[in-house]
Structure formats: structure tokens, C-alpha cells
Length: 114
Image (spheres, rainbow, N blue to C red):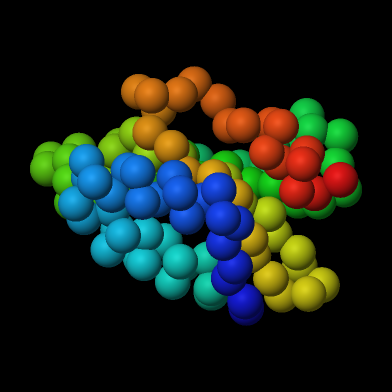
């Protein structure tokens, strides 16, 4: 499995890492899980179906973070990625905290996968 990152994702990560110091470490755990099993796994992750794209785009809702002691997987971070099963490839699209943003950036998804 190949895991790639969009430039916009890297900017998201850099910005959020300033506030949440353990975020990069937390995401390494998520990447290890994606490397082994990138498919959706409710209730932790689910496919975003209303995009009108053939690309499989998945949202991860429950990401454990050491930055939020006592919260477990209810950290509030959201990770959006595209999964290309035939190519065995995952592209990380967007990372945000639910207190800063309600939903994923659909324009970013469309601009990169249409």
C-alpha cells in the first residue's frame, strides 16, 4: 500500500501541529492502520457517497490523540482520504478539527479527483 499526501493536506497538518503537538505521532498510528486496511470501518470511518465521483473517498471520524487526555478516540480530528483499491494506493486529502470546520472541503476533493 502506498500512502501519498496532497500539498493542501501537508499545510493542514503543519497548521494543526502547532496547536496539537502530538498530532503527527497520532497520525502515524492512523497511517499504519490504513496501510494494513484502508477500507471504511464504521463507526470509525465511512465512505462519503454524495460526491458524484467514482473515486472512493473516506472520512475518518474517530482518531485517538494524546493531545486530548481522557477523550480516547473522540478527539475531534477528521481525516479525508481517497482509496484506490486496484492501485493499492491511498491519498490523504484533508485534515481538520471539527471545532474549526463542520464538513470536508468538497471543492478540494473535486479539484483533485475529477
